[in-house]
Length: 219
Image (cartoon, rainbow, N blue to C red; front, side):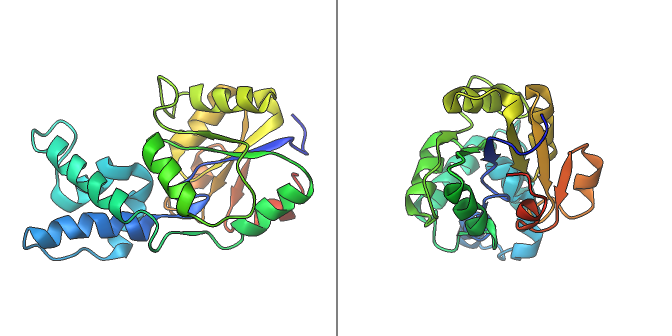
């Protein structure tokens, strides 16, 4: 596919929205209730795209195969659901991208590994210009990213070939999913992955700031 693209798909955490403050708060509430010190946001931020699994690993050194993990995960998810959009905001510049897409009547959507109930709850409380044309969550298809299934499902919902879409994400599995789906990808180096790592992922584009996407003239 040669740009311009006919639709833009976004990862959610670390790409469309800065959700790390509320995710970190959910974890630190658990630590404080156990008499532990709160961890600084800077330490937890890189794990935000990995959800409960990554944050519990940092906060309690428990992996999913640990017997205590399911209890910790469920408590974390309850905490997060109760305060899901207190400090969460769109990344600076993302609103302008969405406004631009709206002005061009170009559809945009969200493809995330966040489970659907949390995705929909967050989107219902997060002010943004426009409404996504599709929302695909981590439990929408049988296999989440890095499987291509969620991106292929999103393209089907948009009634477009995958090659007509571009996917923006801040994690290696986002790039892997896009490549497997036959979709161009842009790595959001402004997200939770750090600025250096995304340049090793084979993304067609690397964005140090969201508005660079518009500067590239891709839509």
